[in-house]
Image (cartoon, rainbow, N blue to C red; front, top):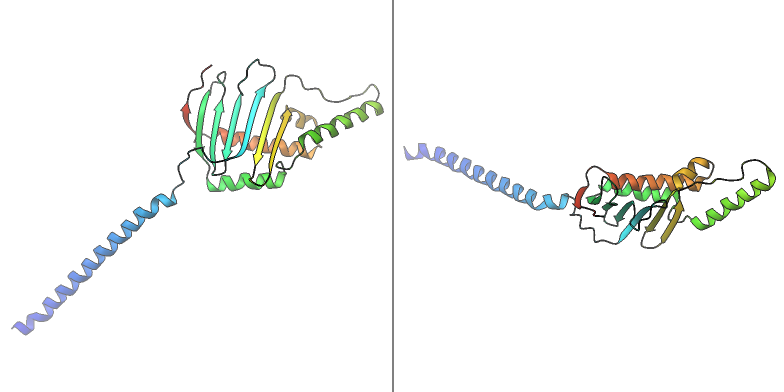
Length: 210
């Protein structure tokens, strides 16, 4: 009688052992997932890494010392945006770029060459070309004059190269000079930085007071 029941007891013991091992494995998997989850998420955006790209927009027509718009992207992909007190969006905002967005901005810098653009040299070449046009086209269009254009200052610091650009009314002038590739590239980059700063996922940190 005892020998007949022994296999049944052995079967129950085997089933219990397998069930226990299954519970242990499931627990280990859950613990590993809990440990690895924070690493898979984006690091918090502290905004204290070295600046990578900075853009400031100032209005020449307004008597104010504060920028109308400020966007900074640091080397860890943290985007800080600040709008002046006269803007309905007034305040400071922050968000973290995705890895794809960060890579896309780096590729745009490389493709447009804005980190190597000599803005003052380009300005001189354009002014010289306008002067030649005046001499060769008496009574015609001498050049371009844009009144009250915003002043845009851009800084790009890759760690190995830093370039600071200053241009008045770049968007308007690029529209008037569609054949100047450097201006088209500058505006394309400028609009990308503006878009990064205006992204709807940004969170407001502080109000901007007059």
